[in-house]
Image (cartoon, rainbow, N blue to C red; front, side, top):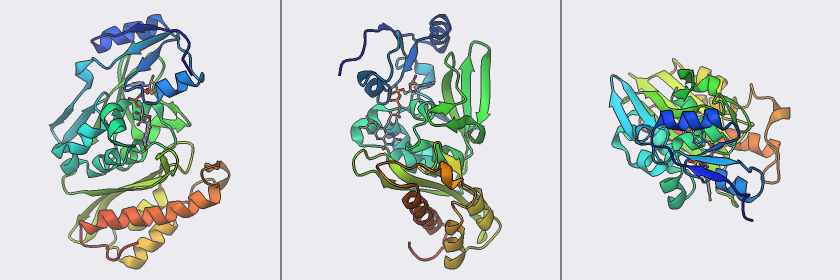
Amino acid sequence: MYPDEFDYERPETVDEALDLLTEYPEAEVLAGGHSLLPTMKSGLASPDLLVDISRIDEMRGIDHADGTVSIGGLTNYATIDESEVVRENVTVFAEAAHAVGDVQVRNRGTVGGNLAHADPASDLPAAALAADATMVVRGPDGERRVDADDFFFGMYATDVAEDELLTHVEFPARPAATGAYAKKPSPSSGYAMVGVAVSLTVDAGIVEDVGVAANGIMDHGVRLDPVEEALRGTTPDDELVRRAAESAADELDEMMMMDDLQASAAFRAQLLESYAERALREAGDGTGVIAGSA
Ligand SMILES: Cc1cc2nc3c(=O)[nH]c(=O)nc-3n(C[C@H](O)[C@H](O)[C@H](O)COP(=O)(O)OP(=O)(O)OC[C@H]3O[C@@H](n4cnc5c(N)ncnc54)[C@H](O)[C@@H]3O)c2cc1C
């Protein structure tokens, strides 16, 4: 299908883009276009104006300074996947970027578009949660910083207003952490039926810090607190990892789990446990404390 007619603007700075979004409340932001254009072609969205932010250089690239890794909202997945800085300091995020779609999608789709769009089956939200990301959001009243835990509200709903942009995502640099993202892709779309992200820091055999979160199971990415609690401060062995993974759905409301033609809620809950175990073991491999394989 063809989309309805729309006007088009291509600002070169964040301020210019924000002025347009303030002036035209019905406008939509166009970044990589890999989620927006399909919704326009199918008639689900018909904005009067597209504000194409893809030429805003201040929103692109990766910086590492003062213990923080900052990724511009327009940075594509391939750049993140190939970045030594991200791989060494925010391993789980590089792993999740690697799992997105195919080469074409990874070259075009952006981290800001993925997180702001918040498709429940996207790969990056769980990794942002597991790595304790901070979202940097700019609007007409200036800049706000939002913890990943407070950013995702529901299906396609985040703490970015229509007149705001997600300009950067910041992460604490954790060179000692290992990370993994285990994904069960949908056979038809390749999106996550379930995906579990783990960031794990082990010191002298003891789990000092652990972040575990999932995509695909609820209407937005969720942190798996019981799994984190079961592991923090322990020296995990095979059995403890298995029990931790089994607790993955303990605090999730079964009635609210995703349930569609791709997979029932009950099947997703099963997938959640086994992919939590898989991600924990993959992350643990690099620490030498978690033995065995799922
Ligand atoms: C064939 C195919 C396969 C895919 N497979 C996967 C997959 O396996 N895993 C996965 O995670 N994703 C997948 N995707 C989605 C892809 O990752 C998209 O790129 C992503 O969801 C949106 O990013 P974008 O840059 O394309 O955003 P766009 O499509 O340009 O925008 C999406 C929405 O976010 C808003 N937006 C964009 N950037 C910003 C910003 N900086 N600040 C505020 N709002 C913003 C836009 O207004 C729009 O509403 C796939 C897409 C396709 C076409």
